[in-house]
Every structure is written in structure tokens, then in C-alpha cells.
Length: 382
Image 1 (spheres, rainbow, N blue to C red):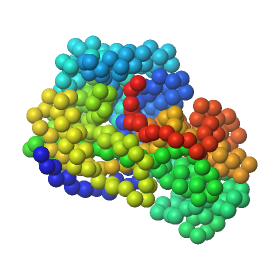
Image 2: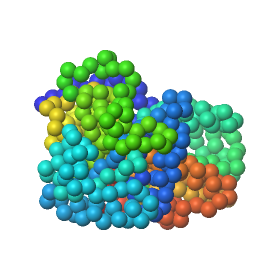
Image 3: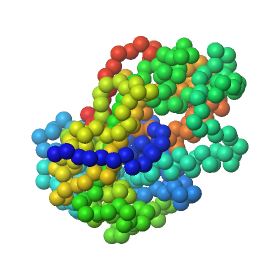
Image 4: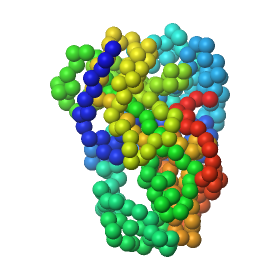
């Protein structure tokens, strides 16, 4: 089957191309603390200047016969709970009640993270930029930037040289190339991922007003700041956010109906030369896997796009000083989890740059930059 996909909107930079899935379901203590703090901050910001956090449970599952991933999920849950994460295993009946449009007969193991949610990433980036400007920061966009000639805290922006106490290089997929041009090697590889939005046939996006995912028949009632809902899409599909670890696909409610993703390419991408639209092969595969998971008759693609993520040898980020004497700091290698952890990571960066301690497990000095390593799917369960 052939699918015609139109590029309907400018998704902006990396944040605008993110899926907007937010959760704290991490088994390592540092990751869990960062995830929990990030969810707190997203909730605190919700309602400000067009940004909205929509509380929606996050389910991850393994299918029958996939004992490796099933056992991994069973092992993850108690570890997460030991770090204060609100997660639990679900039996088939509980899963069916939580997700009425999800096919559950072939699910062997499933778990849910309750304190999770979703958002429009672009709206958050705009909000933070405005907040920074109100605090006196100068925000440049569309500006070519390079690091200086080795002198302390020097950058060159549109040909003009400036010196700062610290330079935080957090340029996403371009971070490796930017640092290499200044003589610094890091163990990071950009890689391409894909996502699409889809609706059931006959639903006209133009007939909708905003995002109609309201708190009707809510799965959970929550009085914390931020809006919680049942994941009911505008075309009637009711589902939480779901990651099918066996199929390697995730889906979540979206203002366009349903967002479906992963489409990970396990090869290094050129950050200056890559395809920004979704591939027809990805679209067909994603729709097929979504139909296997959902009790929907058919889905029509609204939009398909790609973005770049960044990988490291151990799947942990590179976060810390590359050259503290010269004021050079790096933040990259998020393995697809950068946006969802950005509020807490931003606080950690500010603390370390101002003289505080960093996160030892994320120290970029643990690698030389010469390592050979493969790229794996960021949400992978093992």
C-alpha cells in the first residue's frame, strides 16, 4: 500500500521534532531523580503562555514469547519503585480497563507509570526562551556559531567574537562537529528517528478546535497543577501513551489524533545532510504495527517527519566540563530522552557551571572520543 504524506508545518529545530512524551520511569537512581524533578517542573510551568502539560499514564509492554523483554520489565518495576517512581505491573484486565482501544490478548507483561504526561515541545521551548529574556538573557536564533581559537570562554557568533565565563555546548546533533572543529573529540553519534500523526478515515483536522483531549472520564483524578486526562483523541481513540517493546514502536494521543514513532536508523547521520520528512517504508511499517496494537479499522496519515537524536557508547549522556580551565562544558548524548529530562538537566547544568558538583556517571571524561560503538533504539528495554 502506498501512502501520500504531506509536509504540513515547520517543526523548527530538534525540540520541535521531539515526540513530547514525558515520564519518570527510569530504573537507575540518578535517572529516576532527574525524571521526577522534570515532571515536577513541567507541571509547575503548565498553563503559562501557551504551554500545557497533559498528565497521561505511560504503559510499556512485551508480547507473548518475548521473555527477554518481559523479564526486563518485571525487573525494572521494583527498582523504579525503590526510587520513589509511581509504577506498577498490570494484569490483562487492568491493562484493558486502562486502555480500552488496546489489543491486550497477546501481551505477556505490562507496566504503567502514573505520573507521566505529554506536551507540545515547541511551546515549551518558546516559554523558556521568553523566561530567559525576562531575566536579562539575550537569545539569538538563526545565528551561525563556532568556538573560539582556544582562549577561555570564546565563541564566534555571526563573525563577532565574544568571551564568557563559561560556554555550554548543547547544540544537539551538531555538538560533535562543533567541538571537533575546536579540537575536542567526544564519544557521540547523531542518528535519525521518525514519527507520524494519524487519524481514522473521515476525520477532518480542520473541524477541530485546538487540542480536544480533555479530562472526560479521566483514568486518574489529579489535583496537582497541570491537566490530566484519559488520553481520548479527537477521533475517539482512547489510549494512554504506550511503548510496545517487542514491536519497537510507541504511540500517544495527539491533537492530530495519534502520534506513532520510532523509526530508529542505527547508523550515524550527517547533521547537515539528512532527510527531514518521513520515509514511505517507515510510514507503512508504523501503521501496520499500530493496527496490530489498536482496535481501529484503519488510520490515515496526517504528517510524517524525522529528527536527529544523539547516542553514546553506554547510552548515558555526556554532561560536564570538557575543559574547565577554559570554561568549556558539554551537554549531549540523550539517546532520545533529552526533552523529557530538560528541566532537571538545566538545573544541574546551572549548578555545576556555577561551581557545584556534577553527575559522575555522566562525566564526558569517561570516554576518549575514539570509541567504536553501535547505535541502539533509545527506548529499548533490556
